[in-house]
Image (cartoon, rainbow, N blue to C red; front, side, top):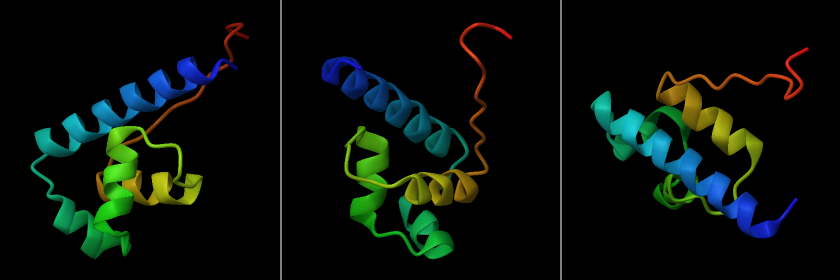
Length: 76
């Protein structure tokens, strides 16, 4: 996959997650307390950085009560 496209997708996801967190009134401090993630790791997720793991993302999603759904591109 094109590296620029990957970066753009990470940024869109990060922006969505940050907006959802803010909409729900959840502070980054609360996420840190609930997950043990560092403030830096939270910034990575919300900025679309490419240096965090799926485990970090899943912990973030759990703390913000946000769900991500996957589907087959072919619609099957």
